[in-house]
Image (cartoon, rainbow, N blue to C red; front, side, top):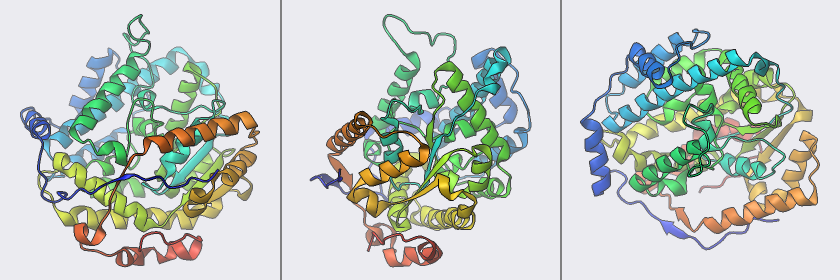
Length: 423
């Protein structure tokens, strides 16, 4: 089944560097500025304990990481009050979720004996189609995946029980949050959806151990980047597995499909944590991913940055992608060939069915006619929803050509037969 192009509305965001704020955007910035936050570790802990009524965070080896995490955020002097509020709320959420998870495991220690059976793990560049592949595989009801509502509230809290008026309060909260975000930044739904049922990256579970590259997407935190890249991620990946075990206990089955672009730079520890996994590594012209990230960053900057600096993202993200891909090239062959499939974007767009058959064969899951029909129905529905597309203009918006952006990535093209996409 080929994914043929549809006629889509092109949305050209022409005020990336000099945004014209809507009344809602200006109001949200003013409201955040009126309620400043302070990134003190004890305040984070106190708020999490107050939210949950719990006090045991489990192993406390994450404290050093959290201190660097908070210090890096505080050093971002160009972060808007909205960014600081969002990051504070998010950090408290992670701490509160960790308290609930540790409490659940203390009451049900058998959780740690649950097998995470041969997961399918997708990794690929950010902004390169991994979300689409994850969503497609998740359409197979034989596989367990992580919808956004569950990713941000994995362990039910008191009051999350179904009621006659609300079958899933966690989902309701997630959908309300998404509607609020989409109202403030309406084009974000085209760039990166966060609706309640959107299938999430597993990064939300890694962050319960206060690691991952997550906060790099929300603030300018070179201190955190350098610290995270220098640290062994065995512990945070073990915590990811523990969270998957708890979610399996709460609502099986245990055959998971997960994804995170970060896995590309953590292949050794990923394999160590999930040695029986099927690894699906997607590949795309890095320039296609980088131009999408630069545009998304600058669109959100009207809310997240104090001042718009055209060079801020340009100086950070191409280099960040280079670091990620260098580790992927270095470590790729650590993965067993019999468990690994490299997927190329140009082949996927032309016809996903042969690739799906290879994924299912590696995972030893029968691709039945019924299952394939489910996947085709997902593709059709997904394409039907895509009635708009963001227009990219590297030279106009960022003063750089595709050829110039591509130069540092020649090592990647030398290693993998990636087709040049952006010219």
